[in-house]
Every structure is written in C-alpha cells, then in structure tokens.
Image 1 (tube, rainbow, N blue to C red):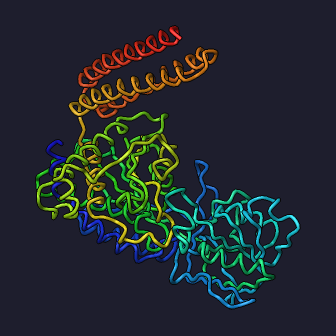
Image 2 (image 1 turned 180 degrees about the horizontal axis):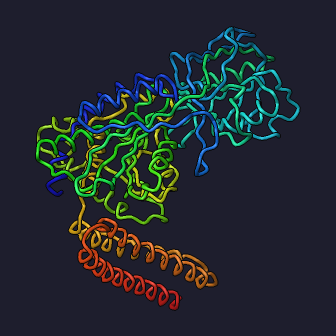
Length: 577
C-alpha cells in the first residue's frame, strides 16, 4: 500500500457513512419529488461544509425527447397509498405509510375517495394469453409477476383495467424465496414500459407481500372478490438535479476522474443507494481534508463526485460537458454496497469496464480491493479509525479476513453501464445478490461501518491515484497490466484445453479454431489495456510520451509472444488427441 493509500485508510471512518445514510434515508427520493430535492440539498450542504466546490447540473423532466437516444421521464411524487379487500371480508393488504416500497413509481392517482372494483386474477399477466376469456376493463388485475411495464401494457393500456397488484418478490433460489420472506414487498417501477410514448400514465400499480398474495388467491378460489385502492401521487413536469462536488486539480484541472452514486429511490433505500452516496461523501471529505492539511499533494487532475438519478445523471452530466466530455478520463460507480455478505446474500463485486473501452481501471480496481482485504484484515487493536467492529478485528487477528470481493465482466448494472456509452472507461462496485434490494427491508441496520469504510477507501484511493497519476504511475501500471494479462491468457488457454479434452474428437478442430480466435481477441484487448495508460501522459512532454510508448511496445510484444505460445501449445495438444 503506497503512502497516499495508507493516509487515506487511516483517515476513513465508516461510522460517518452510516450517519449520511440515516440522513438521506429520511426522504422518499422519487425523481423530481420534494424528497429528492431535500436529499440533494443535504448533499450540497455536506459538500459545502467540506469546503468542496459545488455545482448543480439540471435537466427538465417533462417526457420530451432528448439527445443521444435516452429519455428522461416526468417527475413523480407519492404521498399515500392503501389497498384493501372489501368483499367477502374487509382486510388491509398493504399501506404506503408502513411499507413505502408498495407503490410503483409513475403510478397515476386514484380519485381522492379511492376506487372499489372486482379483482381479476390473470396469472403472470404479461402476455395476451393470460387474458383470454377474462374481462378486466374497469377492474383491478392481480398478477404473479413484477415485470410491471409488461403487465401495465397488457392490463391497463390495451384492456382498460384500472390498475394492478402483484405479490412477486423476484425470487433468488436458496437466497430469497416466498417462503423465506413472506412479508416482503417489492419496489418496482412503471416507466420502463416498452409500449407507446409521451403523456402521463393512466393506471396504477401496487406490490403486496407473498403472504397477502396467498390470502387473496384463497379468497378468489371461493368466489368474486372486491378490492379498494386509494393512491395519492402526482406526475408532473419537474427538474432533475444532479449535484457535483469537485476537488480541483493542479496542473491538469480540466481533466477529471468521475465518481458516481445515484441519489434517487424509495424510502429509506439505505443500501440502494444511500450507501453509495455515503461512500462518495466520505471519500471526498477524506481526500480534501488531507490535502488541506498538507498531508496529500493536490492531484494533477480534478476529481468530481456526482449524485443524481440512476441511469440519467450518467447521460445528463456528460451531455452538459459538450465537446469536453473527452476530459473524463475514467469513472467509478458505487451502488448498493456496505453490507456483510451473509446479511444481504452476496459479496462485494467489482464490475470491469466494457471491452469497447479497455482501461487500466480493470486491473487497478481489483488490485486496490485486494489491498483493502489485506489492510483491514491486519488492522491493529483499535477499530476507531474505520468504524470496523471489534468482532471483525478479532477475526482479523485470527488470520481470517472478513473482507472479500469478486471481479465480474462488464454488465448493465448501474451508471457505470450508462456512461460507457459516451466512451468513458467505467468500472463500479456493488453487492449481488441482495436479499433486501428494492424492498422495505433495505434499512440502515443491515449495513456495516467496516464494509462502508472499505468501500470508501477503495473509492478514495482509486480517485486520488488516477487524478494524481503521471509518467511513473503510468509506467508501473503498464507493467502490472502486462503481468496480469499473461496470467489471464494462461488461464484462458487451460480452460480451453480442458473443454476440448472433454469434447468429442470430431468437434475438437472446430472448438480449437473458435478458441484461437478468442485468444487472439484477448491479446488485442490486453494490448489496448496496456496502451490505455498512455492517456495519463497525453499532455506531458513529447520525450515522456515517446519513452512510455517505447515501453508499451516492448510489453505488447511480450504479450503477443505469450499469446502465440499459448496458441501453439493448444494446437499441439489437439494434435495429440
């Protein structure tokens, strides 16, 4: 661990993260709502207290087409919601005040007095076949699936239902099932529907728990059931606020490393994603405090911390930069982090960048997370600095680290995926699977100060190291990538060999050809990843760039030789079958 990382690790405090999560979790942060505005104001106030430069990038939320083929929905704000069975008996199935995940965002309001109508069960409710022989016009649909945009289209837009309810919780085998969590209520959103365009939605959707769903199915087997729904919510033209906090760079202030965490979602939304916001705030405060104290040098480049609506800020912000979007040299997203794996069902994951944007971040991120595992598992006797629990310290001293992570390929996870469309090298951290994701159980008591500290440290370390990186760091990272790349090529070749050995001899030649193509592609991508380090010196003197380019050429040639060796070895192996 280098000196800057050591300083950051000693100054990070996961308990401050928990404090931020509690404050943000007070608000229902639906897009464009008063609660979202108040949470944005909280973030602005914290950034001001830290002494960071602040900015708010706005965008209209009025459902009109926008550039780059992405859409921003109208604003939406929930106030109350209730669903009851009225006949053959009266029973409340869900209430927004106790279960704020029950209303599907962008649901229309009912009349103030509510609506009473017959409930019609439609199975999954996502295809025309589910509605054969069933008249749902003016009625309430009960569906098994949480794929709300499909049910909305079939039940409400096509067939005139008033609204629909679902008891789906998106089960995860062996982790989250109906039997394990009978009272879980899933939060799902309407605005991803794939039918029609423009205008506000006419119907509404609610989630109920598996327990209440089974109760309702039992009633429906006995005869007709009348339901009552009252929803107070408004859809309106609003403004999207994207909060930016900045630590300005020195020599190359126009270049920036971008950290993102989405601020929106249901209340309390502790893990999703007040946790990511808290991690960014703690990383920003720690870096800035150490710079002000003269313990860290001001980095060459600027570091931006972006808080906004998921999937939208990562389009609105780069769009606001215009031609200067190329100044974003890389990005890091923190989304749904900070819980012990056994609490939420899955480990911390590092998501690599898209293959279209090969980047040193794909190796730097896991290397830093490995350092965090080693550092926090070898902590001294005091848990004060990071907020790590005494139990974790005891485990660490026993030689068993409580901190683990896994690296996964690029995928459509959060804002890291969205900003990749702008050509920005983008990586991220999150936890999956998550039992509490999009449910009323997403509360601060599920989170751990030590895990949050670790994520805040990784965020601070990657931000500062990239922002401060110059020729020496580029040189070191090129060699690190080359070493990792050779190991990856060897692992791929061994897996290919095992696969071919297990196949029929008649298929071996075809499989070999396919795997050799993939091996060549990997060599090409790894070479591009080594080259990505040159972006760190693109504004340095020509002699510096020339020296590093020459070193890059040497490393790439070595990688190509390694690739050829693996290809020849694999070919010889097939020849022996």
